[in-house]
Image 1 (cartoon, helix red, strand yellow):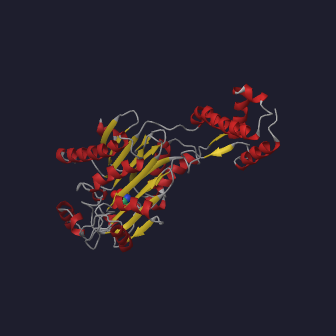
Image 2 (image 1 turned 120 degrees about the horizontal axis):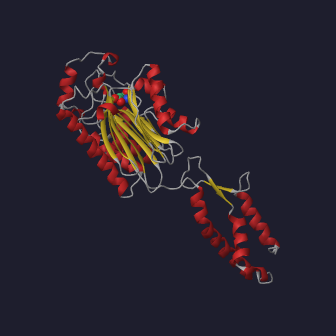
Image 3 (image 1 turned 30 degrees about the vertical axis):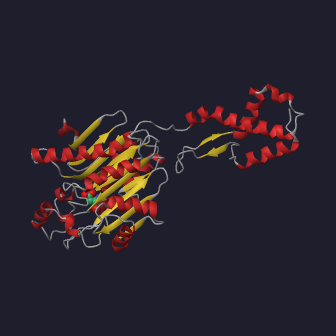
Length: 403
Ligand code: ASP
């Protein structure tokens, strides 16, 4: 049965406008930046469905054009409904499983040297941040919101080197860096050298969502924070008694000569939400006694922070100069995406490469299937996760010391 000439022509034209070289329409679905496109033949299918599911249609070639049109619209809708289960199965599949991984910095942490009280305080702080972030995911919230919630909690905790509790520059002030990235869109927001923003991760989110730009520095970032109505505080707010006395011991040491112990405390989070989207975020005071204006890896997209639904979400911690030179977070993603490596191997190899460059540190990484990797080349890394199956872990030292 042939369609009336003008309808046939129009159907063909619409269909051609949507086809790719395989003759099928490409639909990006909920993975706009990703490589898991799924394809389906919309109009051809609806015509076939009309013919197969509506035998009456074949006897109606003589009915008026308006009736034909109505049948075609109904048929097209029917085609969509019939094809829906096929297309959902054909893509990577939205996961109803969620996952969250956080870190609170890496350093020469040793189980023998850390007091029980201190260890318990860190474990409690990690557990609290994990719960805050995971509550967002459990309530159906986005990976971005979960990352922000976990990091905001750690920024407010003086144990970490992020916002309150951050280390000071060689000039004695606190300068904060942060970044957040959405794996679904690869939108990102970042800031560096901020001295008055109470929660830098919130500013990163505002930069991502409410500005055209990706990254702001120093006074410009602070002016934008003020415009956005974010809470501002005096620089003194960030400087805790512990940091003050810790730095008084070695005020003039250049960063390279510092004990690794003094470098931990950067915070980060990576999350996978129920819609299958990944996100990553990192917030830090940088390294102790850093030169005025020094920028680390944390706020640099691809170095300390990266998320892409096509591969993984990563937040790094360690000697930022090496993580910038190794483009560490993006390297994990690239090893997966272009080298076909599994997440664990991609993350471990990246840390090995940073070590080959002369730097130490670690990453937390999470892929779309909920795989988790937390390799580090230091004595320990404060870290915690909730896996898709609900397994929860809070760890500080290497696997052997944690047993
Ligand atoms: N990577 C951070 C920086 O270099 C420091 C850290 O993670 O401890 O700024």
